[in-house]
Image 1: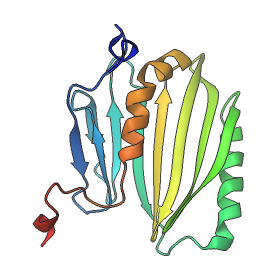
Image 2: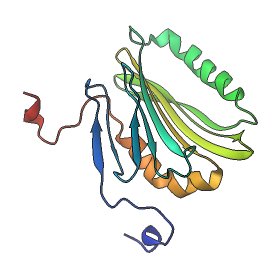
Image 3: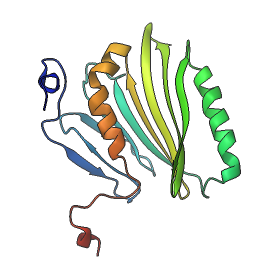
Length: 174
């Protein structure tokens, strides 16, 4: 750990918890101090809020059943749809829009800023596809400073999102 890692005002993990979707579609690690809200829907829809006084600063994770895997020929339409959707955000500035390619799944990642409630918000998001499911992970700060403040913890949580349950004991699935 460096001095910068323990600087006052910078959030740090004191512990972590794992979320495993009861349906087996999703898992991720998060700070247990954060408010975890699970929507009562057929598929996972979770919001993590690190500061309840600032609900617009959050991580939103959702899963959608597409009924069939995304076809390779559909990928350009997804990219185009994301770009068009971002342009609908007030004052949107797209900083990056890239394809993610991993064996067994494909996705799109973007960084942008936009105006909401008189503030310039920052968002980083990943939309990825695995089997017949679409996963969305959205990191958002109510303004650019709030995003910067939580960025390290937000991005670590994003990187832990998996498309299957996490088990400490692999034999527990037997």
